[in-house]
Length: 330
Image (cartoon, rainbow, N blue to C red):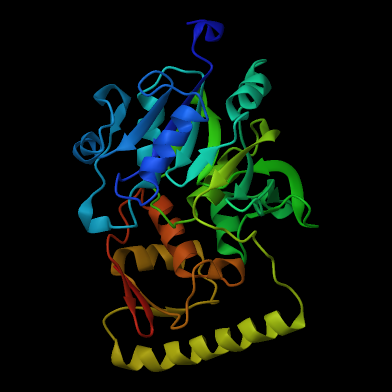
């Protein structure tokens, strides 16, 4: 079918229907955003809950999150299901904490009208008008390597556009981005929420044409502080000492857990060693882990789970348990 005959843009709100901002989110996309439920804006989530919210059935793309997974739901599968259900050329995928500026639709559709862009995003503001998220880029070192190689290294794959490490390739945050539907194949990676799915997605799209559309903005209803990249001797020393402590802890833990391999955060894990961990499970020593520790160290739970999920076609480590010493992955 001639792409010029397809609707240009649909918006899909990714939701479980239970978020505190869902009602306001729907209202503002319809009133301020001037989108019509069931015509050019949809919600992807559990049908029964969304019907209780009085969302028209025509506006629901049904996707039931497995209760046992909790926050670790199959985020890529959900977004792929959303794109698969539509016929527009582009889909803007947003989580249920974002609402549009009054000129969002006009500016975004104008930027997409010549069909010269494949994916991208817009700036995000907090409700008080402060800056929350701006243009993101892949790091330079990612461009000529295989995914497993860059995932094994220290640090996330994505940086802000003005970083000295930034390449010229647009990256996106998983919470809000648009995508040409013909490229939804990049959403088949079997990753869950929190498994650096936006890093992997941006890496996979590195040879497609990305754009950060200026002028339009989204407003996040959950206050966000812009990402800050820490560097310098103090931070390096702190994480260096932490890495050594975890390695010593792993040596002690091996003595009392002989039935399963033990490793520690900041210890290199090559593909052969990872294959062993996939088949046996692994204990990861990382007692003071915080979200996004992958900004600084090797072999964090995020990085190991992503690499294992990809290497096993989604089969590895159904159970990732938090323990006082770190994690059990099996």
